[in-house]
Image (cartoon, rainbow, N blue to C red; front, side, top):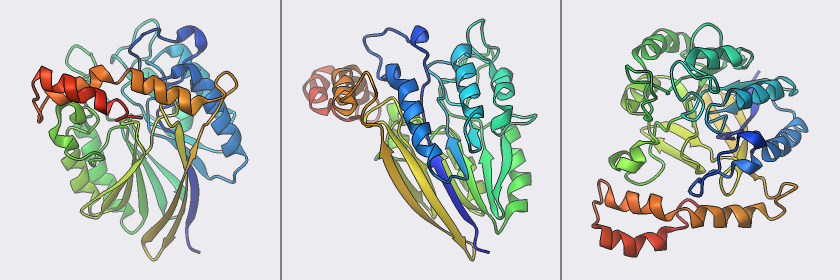
Length: 319
């Protein structure tokens, strides 16, 4: 029988219960719509015959325990399996605080969604199709998040042991940070690097011998990239314009995977009837500081005066 998998990708939902929303004039993420948008997506996906839903990180606004609890309970009520990995907004400190979850607590909370006894996992989705969930969130010696994606040696060693056992099968690899570039020169840009896995080459070298497909988030854009035969699908955020999510049909025939990828959008929620127009303006109005920093940082190194002239023309870069 030819393996067939039908799944959805819902990335960077940044769940924020109303009383937890950060009030910041410079905030890019329109987290006010996080829960109604997610509920609309789940309603749609529940009407489909899906094998699973994959969520590649930034599940919550900023690691709040209340928001993680709400999401874990909501996922448990869905009619299909859900698998998650953490994003940089999910585990802020290794040990956590009285209001935010730490590293070990995150994996305990999501044991029904991929995890067992370690912060990475292997799950059989269909005969001959596997899911590898990886953790790209790393911390400094003081336990503060590094805010750059990194795979620790334990995960690399585990991949060295695991991937040879899957040879001939199809492997979906879910990780929050980008492994391939999705913007020109992304890995050479100081701002672009923050969205990429720092030791991406180490992961790519291990995946080239596998029939692997990367699934990432973090960048808040929709893109599919290829490098040396390795493909990566990155999916935008539910709380950023244009509020996308994906459904994917995968058919594996004689070791070759064929995919049909469809994008869907949340265009309106009850209190935001013209969500796309509003969120586009929201992003545009807040873009100037980010674009100025992009222009004045490596590799462009523009003078502030030059950046001040160009940045307003790039206000729709993320929108």
